[in-house]
Length: 313
Image (cartoon, rainbow, N blue to C red; front, top):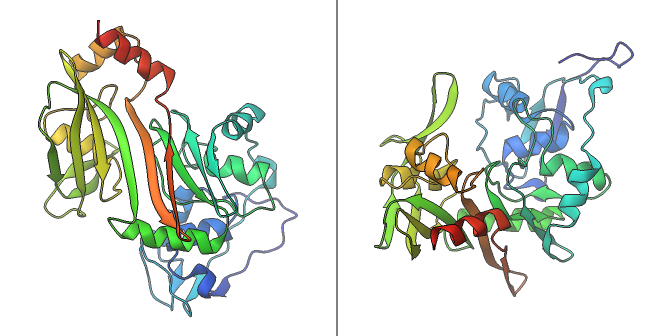
C-alpha cells in the first residue's frame, strides 16, 4: 500500500483481547483495528503470517479469546485515496431499514451492493455505515452475496455482536429463510447435507461440493411450481459461501440468473422475461435476544415479483 510522505512511520502493535472482543473472528477484529484497509489485504496479512496471536500463526476463522495477544503489523494507506460512498447509496440504505432497536438493526439489502469492500470493490454496506455514522458502533453480524437481496443483520454494540455470533454458531440460534427460483420441477422437500470447499478455477473464486470441505446443510421446499421452474423456500443451518447456489446446482436445479453455477439455457429464458439479476432473496430472519423474539420479513423486490407474475401466465 502507498503512504503519504508526511505520514509518521508505522509500527507493530500488540493488543490484548478483553471480554468485549471475546469470540470475534480475527479477520473482523483486524478490519475494526485497521480502518480503511481492504478485506483482501487483511487476508494477505494473515496468510503471510504477519498477524500473530500469542506469537503463532492463525487463519481468518480463528475466534479470539480473552487474554489473547494480537500482533498487528504496520499498514499505511494513502489518505489521498480515501473512497467516498455516494450519497445516493447512503440514502438508499437509510430507506431500507426493516427493524431497529438500541442493539441491532435489520436492513433490506439491495441486490448489487456488496456487504463490504473487496477485490475491485471500493465500498459496501459496512463502509456506507462507517461514513454516515462515523462515531457509532455498527458491525455486520453476517454476510450476503453481492447479488443477493434481503434481510441483513447489523449489531449496534459489541455485546450484541458477540451474542449474535454465538447464536450463529448454534444451528437453531437464528432462523434464516430465503426465496430462490430454480430450474425445473423440484416438488419434494429436500435436505442437502453436502460439504463445501473453496477453490480457484481459471483464476476465479469458486465453491464446490467436496468430501474434504466444511460441513454445510440446507433445506429446500417448494412454494410454487411453474412450467419450467420452481420457487423454493430455503432454510440454512450453516452459512457457507455460495451455499444455496452450490447446493441447488448440485441437486440439478441451479438458480435463475446465476452466472457462476447456473444453466446458460435457463438463464437466457429468464433474461428474456426480464430477469437481470440472481433470483435469491433473504426473505426472513427470526431469533430471540434479551428475552425478546424478533422476526423480520423483507418483501420480494419488484423485479423478482414481476418475473413470477410472467411465469404464471
